[in-house]
Length: 190
Length: 194
Image (cartoon, rainbow over all chains, first blue to last red; front, top):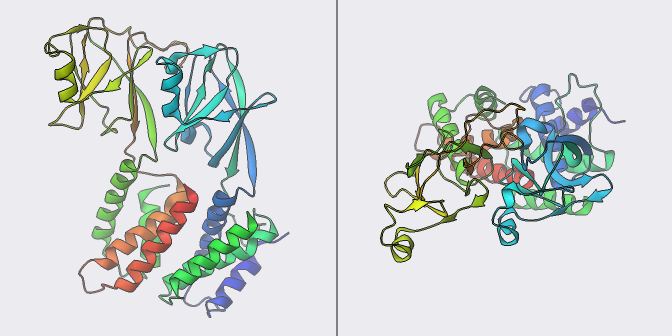
């Protein structure tokens, strides 16, 4: 189980500030947490399933309000069925009154922007669906807390954190190759 | 997340060199940019009054992605299309089938035809305005939402992007290399997060 402390040491060594005189350990830990979130959003390495209560005839759900730990929504299940994703603008071609249609079964889901989840058609009674999403890495209380992402993602996380901390120190690695290298690492993990 | 957190983070990244008033302004600009990108959206209900053609969007919306009258999704029409469709369009009454964005204000919409019924009262007994409590003949708007505070996972992206803008402008601490790198990293992270 990897904890934040050795990762902070690694990042500080790589930016040539092992004692943390230029960059505080707290700042580096913040960068690591954000790097974990970015990597998890890109790759969906740590997922959670949240039960979303659905209401009769309701089609729109606010993700910020009802799924606050959802970083990126990846799928919706209704009982044993995986719902298909459909771009919401396509519903109009199926039914002009799509936003008020209900049925015994929810068949598809969509996203309006990033924050409005559409479950279509609406269920004709209250129920639940399971929403699968990449998990929002929480801010740790101390350096001895375990990281959320698996160990094999740590090289990508530390690379990104090093880039962020270097930038703060105005020590510029050649930026394009650095970004490219992170993207390659992410592709290798995908 | 709060604006204060992002501004603090931006000052840390800038080693306290950034002008706090400028950072504040760039933060507000970023919020407008996010709205334009239709990242954060909202569904809202607007009451309809019989005989009233023009409706104002809620304060947090400055554009619409879709409008529904009662059950039906309305078509967005241009002035030219309306004139071709019906020369009496300004006075026509009936069940709305389309809408026109006001040319002089991006906060107002005009329904065509003018509604000949009012919506049911907005009384939400079960607390589900978009479910069982949906008031008949109401307008439902899907629109990009203007927010003062974005979710905390966007803190760092915002901090780097506003630092980029701050160090690009003409000032005693201008640093185009730092600004460009901050913007590039902010953009890269945003692309991965959204």
